[in-house]
Amino acid sequence: MAVPQEHLAAATARVETGATGYEAILTPEALAFLGRLHRLAEPRRQQLLAARRQRQARYDAGELPDFRADTAAIREGDWTVAPIPAALQDRRVEITGPVERKMIINALNSGAKVFMADFEDSSTPSFANQLDGQINLRDAVNGRIEFTSPEGKRYQVGPNPAVLVVRPRGWHLPERHFSVDGEPMAGALVDFGLYVFHNARTLQQRDLGPYFYLPKLEAMEEAALWDEVMAFAEDELDLPNGCMKATVLIETLPAAFQMHEILHALRGRAAGLNCGRWDYIFSYLKTLRGHRDRLLPERGQVQMTVPFLKAYSELLIQTCHRRNAFAMGGMAAQIPIKGDQAANDAALAKVRADKLREVKAGHDGTWVAHPALVAVAQAVFDEHMPTPNQLDVKREDVRVSREQLLAPCPGTITRAGFDNNVEVGLRYTAAWLDGLGCVPIHHLMEDAATAEIARSQIWQWLHHGGVEFPDHAPIDFALFDHALAAHAHRLRDSDVPGASRVDDAAALLATMTHADTLGDFLTLPAYEQL
Ligand SMILES: CC(=O)SCCNC(=O)CCNC(=O)[C@H](O)C(C)(C)COP(=O)(O)OP(=O)(O)OC[C@H]1O[C@@H](n2cnc3c(N)ncnc32)[C@H](O)[C@@H]1OP(=O)(O)O
Ligand SMILES: O=CC(=O)O
Ligand SMILES: [Mg+2]
Image (cartoon, rainbow, N blue to C red; front, side, top):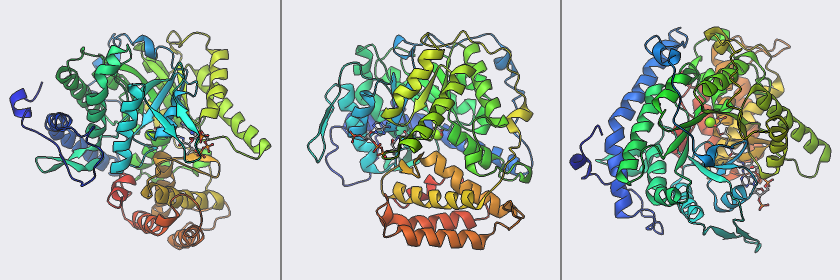
């Protein structure tokens, strides 16, 4: 390990809250473990975040992302990832959802092969959400999770539950309730550390394992830090080396140029890559925020079939299969629509079409947002992928260039598209501030990644100047201010989730939209207001 054991042994995380009831999770031993993780990883994490800022400054100055010259040998070399455990061989349908107690039980019972329990895009990282989530996962791992709703409906896990995979927060988010040496911890390490400390050994004994999805990575060095953290945790918890498995979301534009490198950094534990399409679109917007020639049209037009997204998903499949890792698809935003059969059929048809595209392209599995979509996705994968995965589909035909990954996306910005971005940005932020990290808005799933697209697009259209609707009417700040005020007025006394935080959300959105620079993450300033 990079840091000597005796140095690490002194570190203990302090919990900066008077909350009680979490003693079983926040034990002195668990906090000491978090302290050691922090000292191991924090200096490097800060360097990596600084490297992100430096890269972005170059992109703002006109440079475009590219494949790295210094890692060509990794891309060209013949190597594969370590064998992937039996529990993760068939991942044809993975359900995702926040770490809320009832939803965990529903997800485990959904019939999906895998359940990704999410401390990230679909979760507001309040202290209660994160700690309750840890209790819920501990109870799930130990086979004792149960829940009774206020109406008296009882929930418990049935036979053949989905395999649990946990997504901790990304490297950028602080966790202000935990500090070591007077510094706030990384949210990523708190989520990861508490989960493995309390569950890794039990999972290992059950022939499962501590399995993870790793979000928002931007470079192979960030993957290498995760590898170091996991190796350290395996040593500390007396677990076999490599038993912690990681599937990395390729959901930033810079990471798309380093897919081989990211798998290589984690090659002893990589289980695959995933097309995190929503954050990827957000990252395209953010990385290229200084490039007037690469403005995106309204988000409804940025489908997976547009050239830059098609190129990225095919490169991901080819990369994974060359390295014997799984190439996971992503999330269609449609969810079931109650009380309107025709609209529901149309939504399900869109999900079906999305999954058909994925399985035919060579993906080994996909994500769904809702239990009612498991059977829809499963039917498509069962029909077109009779084997547990399709690692043998190598996609050697795929040739993806730098230009294709960066290709501008033609389309339009309609008044409805503009207004929808304002409404979604506002409603989602309000719900998030109120503790709900995933909400349905106009029958679509909206989470942190989709909301980031909404607010970044507004910023981009306003700040580049000269952007117009199809009828040549200008898109300007007065229009934005008016739309925001109108939605805030309508929503503040409504019954939508987060109505009580609408004014806070509107103020935050106004500040971020008027700021000269597109902010890195909506959730960073929003976290200050939790
Ligand atoms: C960009 C990305 O990162 S994608 C990954 C992150 N996003 C997600 O994980 C999406 C998770 N999905 C959700 O949170 C929800 O499905 C929403 C918010 C989109 C819709 O929620 P709702 O409108 O409340 O759904 P609905 O009322 O139809 O729910 C019906 C039942 O399904 C359950 N349910 C809905 N979604 C899920 C889920 N993802 N996991 C488990 N159970 C679920 C509900 O708890 C409810 O259970 P009940 O009948 O026992 O009370
Ligand atoms: O995390 C998934 C995404 O699409 O973003
Ligand atoms: Mg994401």
